Length: 533
Image (cartoon, rainbow, N blue to C red; front, top):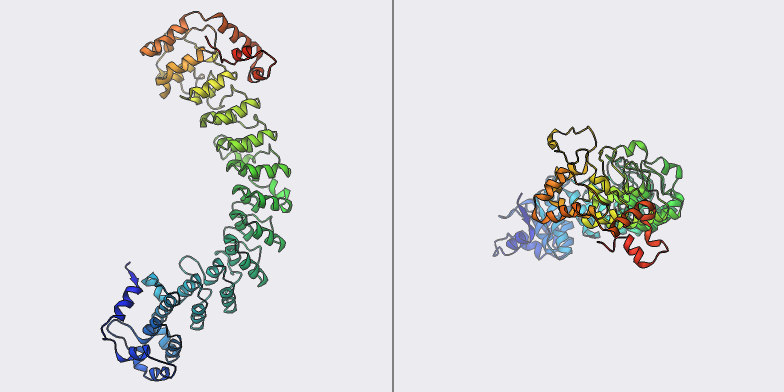
């Protein structure tokens, strides 16, 4: 649709080289005594010039307010209705005149007085709102975006216009829940003056939209602490949930507003929280809100509280704890806070370590290892003969070394049922038969091109082993990897074999805390693989 620009149109009219009729000249030069003379000619009032203009347009353009009122009074009600477009045009031009700027609007806007009233509220023009109301603008009619004049005035925090609209019959509490209420807009925008004004005029602080959102939800989402405090002081209900089942406390936790969380915790029912499908702590963990998590833990939130089974089952990994949520979404800072608060690493069906390894988050992996997570954990639905974490490392060799240094079982990678015999084709292996072996995984995936460096690193954490025919074949296929094969065939040094034996006897838990043992520094470096062959 072509846009109609008044500034261009008016300039053409103004520079019409004197072709305007006498009536427009009389309007332009009119004084208080000439208005009645102009309106006495009824046909002249409605006659258009070659540009389609009547005196109403020109009076509005010239800013002759008194002339405007006189011209309007000179028209009958029927003529005003028939010329509604003219009134709308008048309103728009007058707004432009008051603000010394021209607005570019689409043509269909000119046909709606209500839209023009909303526009006047947007521009905060008290005079124009008053004029529009006096000539029939409907205060409760909605535009195409379900917006009303009162909502616009509240969004601008303009109390005077709000009062005018309420006096004209604007609904302070919409009769249906389809649309947002003025109080919700004030809370959403953080306009404290408008909020207090609406409450004094009888706004319902607990009114919900079609989505179940209250003003308290909106203020909690957008971080307006004063608004939340005011609503609570006016008996706003913190235990009303929206259609998605979230309380205002959930919303504040999700968006990281820890001060608002502190306000809402004392007035939120513990029973309602227990029956929610997710806890505020889970949301804080999911969205990496450590300050919120700290407040919740200090106020008694259960760090190991699981999701209800019905909602946990909606996730493929059946995640349950807030710690798992934090790890799965890369919230390392929140995960650290939860672990310090006593979060268990062994509650979820899938170990959070595997998720951290998959994401490649070394910091979170180290945190979990320090808390005693099972480094050899496996995925229940993915049976392998070797630790799943090794497969999830992919080509991240530093992360793989971190796991191996902390007791990950490297020896299982070299246990093959075929040994030196020929392996069957990978395509002939039953997908749901026996567990997958390391050699089968390595050579049937994109990791084949990383086989050499990975096997080399694994050999540093085992004693004397014999490679199966498949690994021998792949290591012989590349010149750079033949040194790795020779390494496996040569006898390992006594120093290396002793280290492997000592670490095996120590066990995984002690190996992970080897740095805290009362041993000489050189011995600690030796046991931690800081010294190699």
